Length: 266
Ligand code: SF4
Image (cartoon, rainbow, N blue to C red; front, side):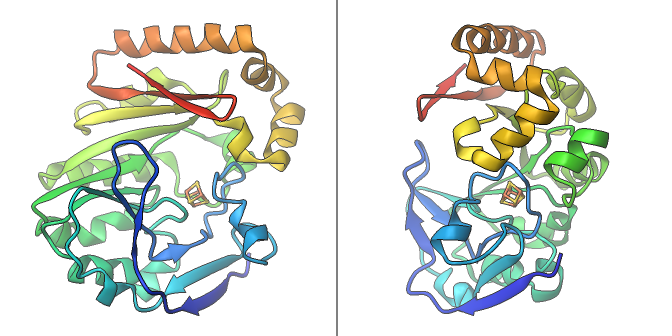
């Protein structure tokens, strides 16, 4: 897919966050050419007057100089893009943001890309930092349908290992969990010992948008049914919690959604 790149100058880079436990978010890119079909940030396409999620990326050209600011509280990079999406290999915008960022800032990075390992030298300069890989184990048919353009599972696990071996604090974000598709135990088996903790998130059907709901209904009707039926969903979450408990790992919780509310349970 051809990606339209739009340069923008902005007034600030650190945005106050509404995510519990997170004070600031940083998005040097808005939009993401990994183009996941379920991406919760897809709604920005219409808001910003573009066509097709994944076909446009806004680049905050002055982000590196704005990154210098010292902020108190946790900073999450990124929430409406992937900081290591393909364009980053050439632009090195994330790398420049990290270079200039005040190293006292408490940074948490999340990506699906092994390109993240390129910046290990800069991560090591931060006083408090953690780097997360989103690992959902999608392969074959579901990978082609849900996120055909993202790095494959094995590449993400290798990147996690490299970060861990470099002595960095790492985490695995197991998301989105699709009932009947995602094998949580298998993901933990392939990443055991490489992450300081895990965080699980069950697919938020509402945030994934109408097109993805249709896709799921057509291609994975059983999964869809579990997600929309209150009783089946409750049973599924109970079983998932039990499965996670039996895995004996450190977890920050399981995130589920109900009526638009985010619920995080141990
Ligand atoms: S990698 Fe993340 S930000 Fe990019 S499209 Fe996929 S879910 Fe959205």
